[in-house]
Length: 425
Image (cartoon, rainbow, N blue to C red; front, side, top):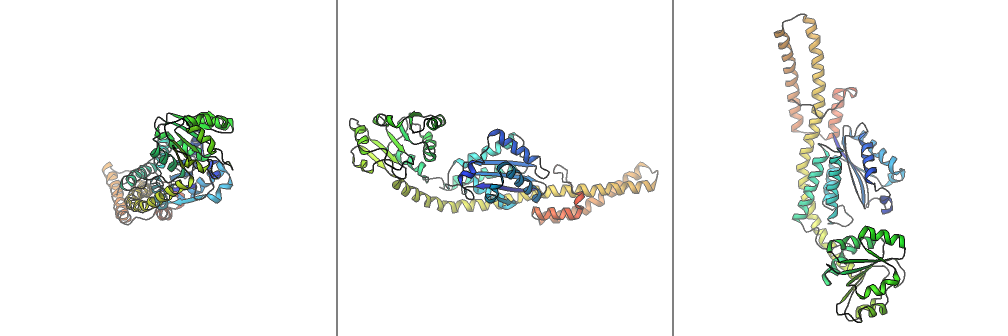
């Protein structure tokens, strides 16, 4: 029994490569079925997010299983991913998954979404019977560790992405609940802002964009109301907060537009510009009743929070190493049981063959004699195997070393692991 991980993440590949690897529900089922159709893969879990695509597998023979999983990925996504592909074994896989669930491997250290995504990956594989006695306890432990890290450290405190820092800052200045929010732009940064906004309960989200098709698609996803740029001045007059996140090379919201918008209003207007270059004329911060924040303000907040999170990450790593040591023993027990099963089955097969030879030579004997000889054969093999298995259990080998040993002991043609076989020591 082995555990392995194959992955392409933001640390190894450009985002556009990972984007092409995101699977629909039906395609995810197909790749899991393709994996389990291989001889040396018995369980699989697919973990996919906007920044990663990972396969976790378990089965009989590690090297063969990893090679089969690698070929499956290349068949699905093309040979171009090979240069971005990382393959981990056993302890590296455990530590990596525990770090993932603790958000230490996220693009934004300490983000909270990954823990839910790990849980969803487990639930999907468990429900569809793609995972079992190895990967399910592993993922359950990873989820438990992720919770513990968040409970015992402050790794998730303080917003560190520009988008989340922008929403958090705007909410502190002008609470977003039941407010009208304008969002200018429909790109990646605007999408992140919209995602974070959902948790603050604005009354109305109005989205301004240039391309009607893209604008409508964006509004369908984030429950927004679409507007053209021509309508922006009118909507700004009764908006409470505006976020601007376009890639336009020039100012889109001039000082005059903002002055007109606040001319007859009593409430303050909060403007958050996260575009590079700026979408909003920076001189608007001099206008009475206007709160203006630029990307420089947000980067300072983000950097301070990131430093604080990295300090907390060290505490999280201590938790992971502690839990890793505990779980290692449990997983070793699982893989030892699998190999013990193979050895017991092999030895008992020899015992039965030799027993039949001996009884045939004895000829027609009383049932009591036959029973005595059979009991003797069982007692001998049990005592021999008991001492050996006890010694191995007290000083367990790594899975790959145990596999080599079993192969030598039994002969490759005899290796037939059955993890459900009863083990007697």
